[in-house]
Image (cartoon, rainbow, N blue to C red):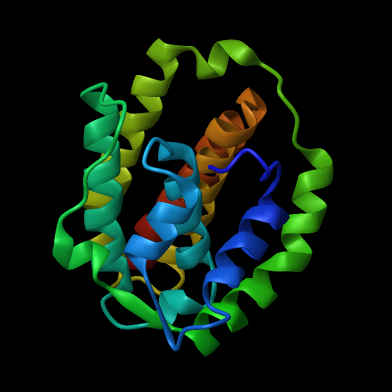
Length: 194
């Protein structure tokens, strides 16, 4: 992530800036803007996408699941840079939808930015990040099935956003909060399916 970006609101503004002069914004543009070493920001972006109204776009959960799996598997393998296939990088979203989703997320981002700070560092030790990556693999594999349960992909999106933000802000408390959200989302999905 560019060094000038220090919080969630700045990252959203940075991504919104990509849409100013284009009718469509591709995933490749977003990836280039946050940097190819940034696993945390990418998890955060895909989580925010799933949590936003964009989660209602048909197939979004399937695409997001593949994206999360690719990121998480590369984290598990200890890669320093990530790779995504061209068909994913070429996916794009209309400028007006992206701007609307970012506008919807900004007020919450401001509140979140006031609360995050580096703490509980042991939760983000290199061995712990492997556990985060393993959890993301499970989430990515489950996402296509969650499209059948209304709002469950939004709950999972929130958990992914929190995990991504924990990696960006080095805030171990966020890992614990994400685990609680995943537990609540899993319980909700089980109840809905029964």
